[in-house]
Image (tube, rainbow, N blue to C red; front, side, top):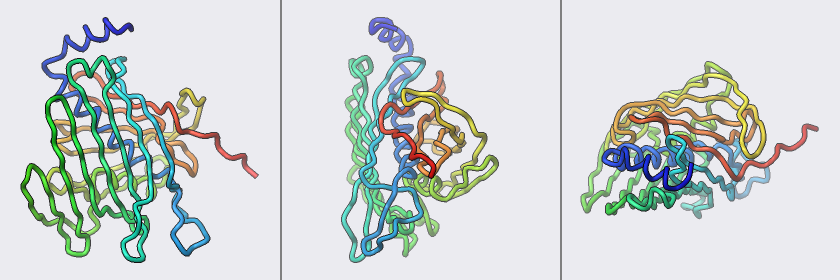
Amino acid sequence: MNKTNQINQINQFRPSLPSRVSRAWLALACLVLGAMSSAISWAEPGNNTPSTRPFQVGEQLTYEISWMNITAGTAVMAVSGAGTDGDRPLVKLITTAQSRPAITTFFPVDNRVESIVDPATLLPEHLTFKRREGKKKEDIEYTFHQTEGTVTVVKGGTIETLAMPPGTQDVISCLYYARSELSLQPGSSLTLNVHHDKKNRKVNVRVEEIEIVSGPWGEVETARVLVVMPFQGLFLNQGNIRVWFTNDDRRIPVRMKAKVIIGSIVADLVSGLQASSPTQ
């Protein structure tokens, strides 16, 4: 499809696209980051033996985001060290999402989300979301006080401290935790508490099937995982997201798919999947 046809197809749904499609696309990019973190390997200072979690600082994955066969944008996910808090090392999960020219012409998007987590507990400490969508500019911060069972939210110049259950995750760390703790055997499931948009929610994760997925990196065996995201503010209605993880110790998400009111948002990995090490 050439650029002119893409723009014509976009303009056909232009009144609803910014609120219904662009937000869902960005939410999917955020989901990619949380899920991707299970493909990372982390070694704690003072310990010469790597953690059993498959986490590695320096991992970077690039996804192409499409809607109705239109390339809408690109998401780049990276993991970096975040220094220490006393003796505790911290890790930062970063995602950036940008619209492609055909979308930018009428609704530019340039978003950045960062989540700082404790790799020992996989619990979030701080989340920031710098949202740039069209003419809208909004920064949101969440600070998680796990011991006290509260979360402080800073949004639009207003500060609120709200109650949350022990062990609560954010919208990124929840998938980081699930990918580390969930068995990829079909039928395996997990339920966790997530704080999003000033509300505490339960997120259900379930492994559906083992499938072969093809991409620019070839064919890989994957586990198809269903994530039920009951966030009104994320996808505008309750809905499901499916993530295809490589069925190995890397657990790299190679594809994500979320249905929206018109069609589906799809994220395909285009860079970052390396060949598996030969079995000894």
